[in-house]
Length: 251
Image (tube, rainbow, N blue to C red):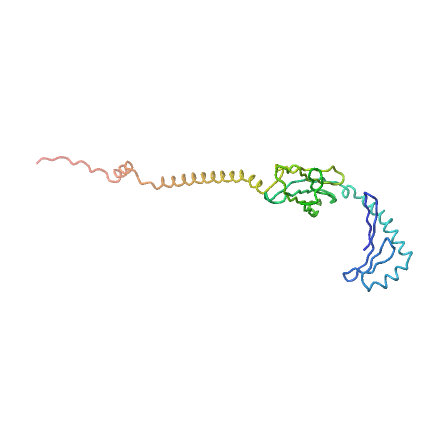
């Protein structure tokens, strides 16, 4: 495996050329001394032979510090719009509970060379701080979190601030304002109106179902209602007509 590195800020370069065997390092080229390093005894004969190849080692030095770097810069210019873009981070203050550390969470930034730290009264804090690892997002950007274990009373929180530094943009400073902290309790509070709304909808649905059931039951009762007295009299008269009048006779 061989390659080179170029720092576009100070224009420094570095290179590497190394071999492995059976999953382990076997021999590697030292660019500063133009010699080979053998981490295992089996590579010592190869080291002794290659150390004597002065022209061969000069070639690798020229390749790693010049030719490879020129190709690297060329590839970078081809993909400049993608590789050298800058995405501004979104910064949030998070806290699980009042006794938990306050987390400064920066996400959506690019490239991954970011510096996130806490300051108090303008001075960077090294104690009470737990820096996190830069992690990739699914869209190609990155995220990182830095915890602050608070010992100060809430009245002194405004003395603290989270600072995010990313090349190409101005520093982002977020004061430790309790109103800006997103907590689990805050999330629960936000769901109360939703819960109330769902209860209202359930009650309305129950009322509608109740009305429909009442109307259905009422209609069923009307179909099976006993015949009333008036109707009964009319039916009786129709089925059993009154006997005809008999003439009166005298004896």
